[in-house]
Length: 281
Image (cartoon, rainbow, N blue to C red; front, top):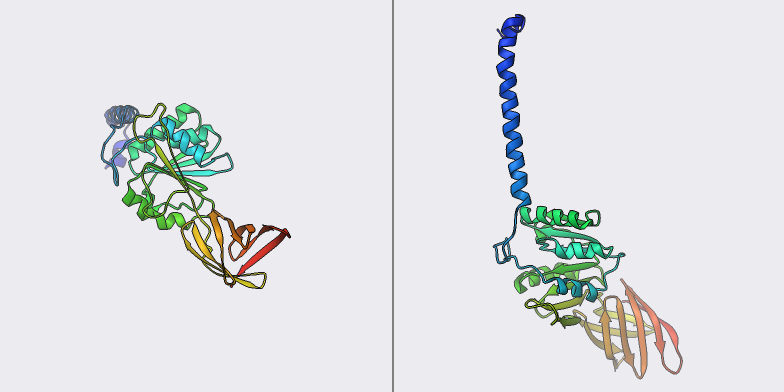
């Protein structure tokens, strides 16, 4: 029947005109709805203390953001991931320093707000954001991780952080990582009224076990970045592990080197300075 009606021009015009009007009205209504949604999104203002998936939202004070990046010694060679990025301030501040930075945020309205803030700051190319769960996020690309999360969440993340490349820097606003003690801690007092302490961890290389060093056994025990052990039957002293950099003293000889998987290489000081290599047994 429709084909017959379309064959008659007067009847066709009669049906086409209301259809066109209806289509135009629908388009205007849809445009209005989209415009209203855009205006609502652009006017979104988060409230301090509002509920989130795992934590309430409290922004990191800007002076502490700067301090956290300073402690991490973040440079344009780094890739930073901010876990729970909120309004985007840490990611945006990093991007202003020339650092590629990526924020993970569960609240989609926060993600859009952060993107608008990055655009307004002119750093959208370096500052990106994802609406995602931080526990489902691949962190392997990061050389710097920043976070402002509760201790229980930090501890839940800790095993994954310890699997990152040795030397990766992890910086937390205020909250610790359980028994993994920070490598550095700093509190700022100027222009900061609350949440003013930054804690830095450097992911340590895995060195626990037996190594062969110059025909002798180097036996190491490890808890995070704290190490102890023996070379042959002699206790090592002043042992230090910072990322992939290891050092210790045996009988007055200072060994310094870098860990690279199953090998360690470096130099030793003393009466006869020389290179040294250790291979995992």
